[in-house]
Structures are given as C-alpha cells and as structure tokens.
Amino acid sequence: MTITLDDLDFLASPPGSRWLERLRDEALDDSQTLRLLDMLRRDVSPQRAGALVEMARLRLKGEAKFGGEAGKMWFTRDGLEQASDPLVRRYRATRVTGLRVIDACCGIGADSLALVAAGADVLGLDYDPVRVRIAGMNMAALGLEAVFRVADVRDGLPDSDVIFYDPARRDAAGRRIHHVEQYQPPLGLVNEWWRDHPATRIVVKLSPGVDLAQLAPYAGGVEFISVSGDLKEAVLWLGGEMGMGEMRATLLTPDGAFSLRREGSLVRVPISEPRSWLLEPDASVLRAGLVGDLALSLEGALLDETIAYITADAPVETVWARAWPVLDWMPFHVKRLRAYLRERRVGRVTVKKRGSAVTPEALIPQLKLQGDDTRVLVLTRCKGSPVVVICGEPVN
Picture 1 (cartoon, rainbow, N blue to C red):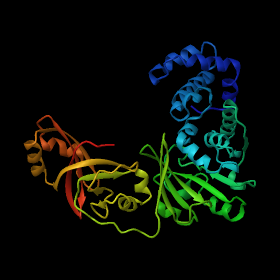
Picture 2 (picture 1 turned 120 degrees about the vertical axis):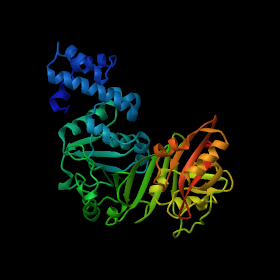
Picture 3 (picture 1 turned 30 degrees about the vertical axis):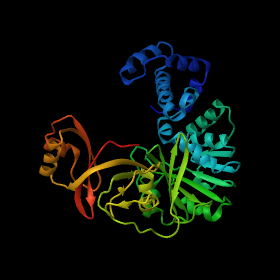
Picture 4 (picture 1 turned 45 degrees about the vertical axis):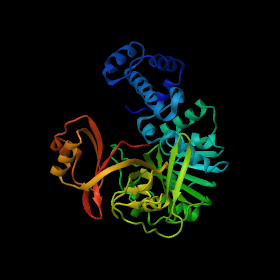
C-alpha cells in the first residue's frame, strides 16, 4: 500500500507506536495478512491497519540494509528498495567528509544519514512530501541532524560544495528505466549543474548495468562498486580525483575497501591455453573493463580476447578473483566429456559458463554421471574455440 502523510502522523503517535511495537512479535508473512488486519481493525480504521502492517513489514525487511536500527526507522516500499547497501553508503560518504552536500532526490534519507554520520552538512531535497517527512523522521530517530525540504531539483539547487544525485531508475509502475535520459529526473541535469552550480564535485548513483555509451556526454569517471563479490551500483564522479573517461573497480568487504584502476595506456594481455589455475574476476572488474589489467598484475593470461577468465601458472592470492585448480581441459564435445567423467567416477558436477551457448540444465542429463567424485566444469572459449575446463573445488 501507499503510505500517506496522515498515515505517518498516526504511526508516529503513541497509539501507532504501541501497535508497531506489538507487531514486532507477530508473524508478518503474507499468509498472516488477514489475521493481522482483523486483529488491528478492532481498534483502528482499515487504512490505519494497512499502514501498520506495511510499516512493520518494511522495518523487518529494512534490517538487511539498516541492521537493528531499522526497527525505529520509517520507510516506503520504493524508498527502501532504492536505498544503497550500507557499505556503499559509508564508502561514498567518507569521500565527501566535512563538506556542504546537497542530497538531490534524497528519498527516505538513507544516503543523507551516511553523509551526516561522516561529518557532512546535508540539505536533502525531494519532490515527494512523504519521502521528505520520512527522511527527517529517520534522521531524528538516529539522533542526527540535517535539513530536508520539498523541492523539484529541476528548478535549481542552492549553493554547496558537493551534489549527490540519486534519480529514480524505475517508473511509476515499477518498471526499470534503461536510458539515463529517462531517469526521473533525467541525468542531463548533471551537465547543467556542472556548468552553472558552484559545486566542485557531483556524485551520481547509477544502475550497475548502465550503458556506458550513454555516459559519453558527461565529463566524469565511472566507478563500479561490488560488496563481497555482489555488484551493487555504478557511480559517476565529476570533479575530485577521477578523470574524464576513467574507469575504476571497487570491492567493499567487512575488512575494508579495495580499488583497481588503469595505470597508463590500454594494456595488451597474452592469450593462453588453460594453465594450472583458472580465475574469475570480481564483477566490478568486468564492468570497469579492467580484466586485462588484473591479468597482467597477477602475471596471468586470458583464455580468449572476449572472455573474462584469467589463467595462471601458480596459485594467486587476491581479493579480486575466485580461483579454481585446473585438472584438465579439452575441446568441448559431449561424448568425449561423458567418457572422461565416467572413467574417473565423477557423479556430481557444478557447471559454470561464459561465452558458451550450452546451458547446465541441458548438459548435465547428457553426461549420465555415475560415481562419488565431484568436478567443476567451466564451459567457455579458448582462442575462439569452445572448450571445457575441468577444475577442482575453488580455493577462495
């Protein structure tokens, strides 16, 4: 359901707060909806009952992004979905510490919270009064201070040192928007701000699958950020330490942040048949186009110019890739592979693929596996030809 300003007034009132506290101990899955609504409607209106169930469920769902603090925060369904991963929020915020920041399209205030916690002076702007109210409520709930206003950022922005811009990447029906100039508001605002606004840095949150060709008109660098191997978002940086057209891969883990960027001109990487080890780079490296750079830094080679697998002679310890020991490899042919696996009593396989039209679902039944041993099969290409690389279990 859609949360309204009247709903927020009730939810934050003493009766609303008591009900939300009670709902923390209730089963909140969809199968319980009628029971919960019937229970609540004995004391509140149907609209308020629906708002209570919705907020209780959003707080439970919000624990994935806000931890234990979600239990005292306020959300809308789309606002929670658009909120960044907590490690990403903190990472970006530390790069604008101590500056005046406008959070343009602030939503429910997730990034504003991280920016204020990192020492920034934040003004949050959004055209939706409900999101603006929630952003202020969340800031107060966590004991932090920022200013939030209802405003259309297309009408201009007050002065600041930094603009953080997070346009909506879904339309009103929830469908994903694939072109940056159809974002709501469009990305084109950034060039207007860069030309006319005194900010020395503009930071734009983008979809990790953004078409890089659409970013050609923007005089900034693009950073792809993954969290423990899961690609989360792309960030367009105008100003600061990233130059125009630069690509960077960043990996965030509980142990810290790691960055990879190109040093110097475009690299030339050797192409090789599978060696003793097969490495699969982190998704941020793939999106940033830095697979060749990583291969050279690891003294490795590529299997194919178009395939993002690295092969190396010796085991490599790196946060940037998973590694499998290569036991064997051969040109891909189902009958030959089946005979190979039967001879070695392989009864279970994990199938990975990159650059192959064959699917695991189609292949595994054809192998007619028998035995107790296991293997990892990597369907890919080497020097333009389809191959299967037979590996042991990953070491990291």
